[in-house]
Length: 178
Image (cartoon, rainbow, N blue to C red):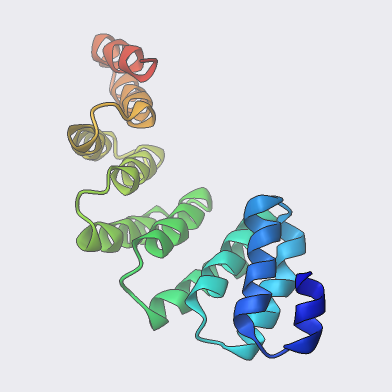
């Protein structure tokens, strides 16, 4: 088993990371994955894979501030990771820090301008910030990239509804059900 191999090769970050992956991805035991990723990083503090997964595990266990710090560290090491920008922005959105979240979504979209997932998240953050017109425009871009993206249609419906455009909102909601 991997536990036996870890005893033989305790300084191998890939083995520690693999154990973390098993707990994180396969078993969805987020808290149990944390010590394995921390050990991997102890052996290689530039291990992007382990840093990203450790941040994700901390976020899933409700420790969002630690997760955000880890995502920021990841982005210092490799600023081209769209997913890290997006996940950091999601944490900031949940914390109501919309301006900083918007900047991080924009960084992700600079790297991957055709990413409907990030575009949808940005649109939703704009909606939460009360910037309904910007939200609508951003969500429409997400939908133009992926016309079948039901979450973007649902978020568009919410933004249109907030603007008092009830018929357009209902049409968007109807497309989210398809």
